[in-house]
Image (cartoon, rainbow, N blue to C red; front, side, top):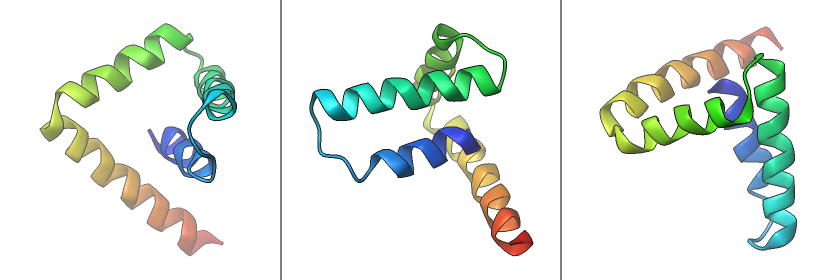
Length: 74
């Protein structure tokens, strides 16, 4: 989720439409490849988090902790 969060931040500079969709597809494919999962598995995990707000909150709290640690190390 840390890498998904980074990818979504990078995509935020783009307006909607085909260009953003293409970039999103590229980023999500890269995240899946980095973590050794296929794209459908990544999409399923993201969908589970969307349907479970409490779980999503827990995961994103850990992501924010990781982001804070990454900032401190720089």
